[in-house]
Image (cartoon, rainbow, N blue to C red; front, side, top):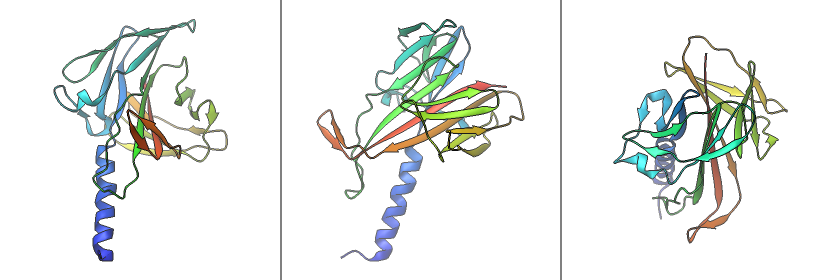
Length: 211
């Protein structure tokens, strides 16, 4: 029988390993061209290929023009990013991420979905959209109340924001540069993917915008 201390240490190790592996996708660029990165924006960590960038499986890219017309395009993998043709809005969905078996056999098996947004058009399953100095968080078109959005500044500084009953939160920007807002949402929705069963879904989205 395992002692309570061993169980506690194992649980904490599991939490820390999950946090360390919780990378994000985010976009950098403008209307002419964009780059999709995988890593940690706040830590200036961009994964490479060969390497962990290869873990992103066939990202689905949608370009939305100023009239609202959507077009699917192909992203080309480079050394540390995916190159994407520019557009007024770029939407990214990584929906085919493989299910990884946890090292701790008691830990729940989860399926991950990654999204990234740049611009104001279109919609994502988990989405952050901007209106002036407000951010709105939605899941499947419905506002997520009392949820957290992390705002990451160009220098890596992070500020947690919390949504109201309408899924909205206000923010202010200090220094100029690229800001990345990140949010996560968990659905206790079991299923099966590529022959592997999972107990819940983890959705992560980022929204890139500049001051």
